[in-house]
Amino acid sequence: MTSTTEHENAELLARYVEGHTDAAVSASVEAHLLGCPSCRAVVAGLVGPVVDPVWSRVRAEIAAPRHSVLIRALQRCGLRAGDAALLDASRSLHGPWALASFLLTASAALASWSGSVHGLIAYLTIAPLVPVLGVVAAFALPGFLADLTATAPYSMLRLALLRTVAVVVATVPVSVVVGAVIPGVGLLALAWLTPALVLCLLALVVMTWWPPRAAAIGVIVLWLTVVVLCAGADDVTTVLGAPAQLVYLVAAAAAAVLLVARVRSSHAPGGTA
Amino acid sequence: MRTEPDDDAAVLHAVAAGDERALGVLVARHTPWLRVRLLRRYADAEVVDDVLQDTFVAVWRGASGWRGDGEVAAWLWSIAVRRLVSRLRHHKAPTPVGTEQLDTRLASAEDLVLQSVTHGDLGAALLALSPELRTVLQATVLDGLSTREAARLLHLPVGTVKSRASRAREALRRSLVALPTTDARGA
Image (cartoon, rainbow over all chains, first blue to last red; front, side):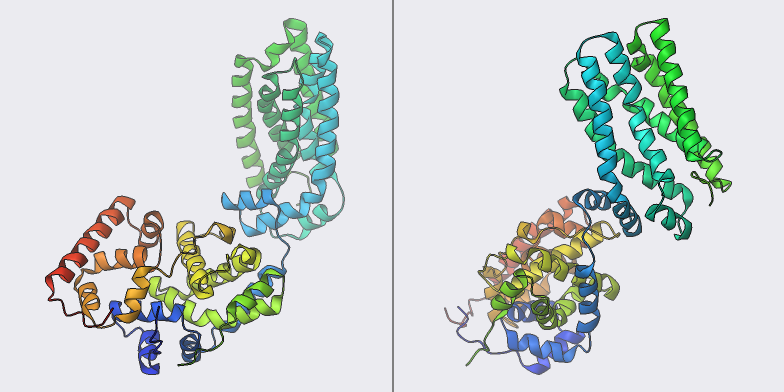
């Protein structure tokens, strides 16, 4: 269409680059630049060394490994770049965690499939413990994460919560799906999430006093006691009924407050801060 | 007049094939003018450099999303101005979106008109607009942003952008109609 590809003269381009052109002229120059490589080259000669900084940053970013879909989704929700890197580092643990939760939940769900009360008890007992075991494992496992903990300039609470998130993200969906597709479990596949939350927070709190292993055993014993008491007193499903859910939420809030208080006084979960 | 061989399209194909040096060529060619134009929209060099980085990273990851028609420069601008808008929405580091979602229609009729008009009637009419109306017109018509995107860029409610855009169009139309038909610029 533009038969007259008369190039804006260098002086006009210089005035544009310096910001001395009015809105109409600027718009005209900008429209022209879109279709004119030689005028773009003139602009490049006028602006000084702006390319190298941009190029080095672009190169650094495309050289960095890309985060997983999950981490990028979390980043979109406001996760910081450093936290993303940390979560990505612990991604290697997702596989074992997911497998463990799958096996545990599947066995429990299969047990309850038979329709016996014992099967249901097994599911209700094991499912809330899966994320807890994952959280404890995140602190107890030797290796990369432990080294990182020792050296990273991280708030310990932040680190603890990040690990918990990583575990929950890796374990909970699998457990829910497995529970939901097995007949006989139904809504219970979601109802155990609140006790699981309480147990996770509790485990973190206990780990500010005890080593991870001892904390895990303590929390497991506590949960087993609750299940057994409910099973002995009444229908076992009361352990996940509405009144119980309320108790769990209160307990979760209390555990969260306690955890924050403990970490504020520089007791980090997992010991040796 | 001879136009220089514009092999941006070829460069972009090489980028899509994973050639990092081709991306370097693209960055060298297009960073200067993109930077100047972005700084016109948002006068913070730090933010603009972040936007440029986002833009070329998005190109690297989505170069295959280029449809192969139209100016590469116009496509780059459409990515850059949207990256700017998204930077302004959440000031933390945004995640690059796939460029395939981006609209590449930019060399619009308005551009063609403006390309031939500098100090003509349209230019005068544009300058006669109040700054509020002009910035809205610039964001929506010239930069090819949607109403929602323009609202974010200008920190205005969507409704305000809509009403100002229609007022600006109306004002432009009236002042162009009011002028004696001196358009000797030829058809």
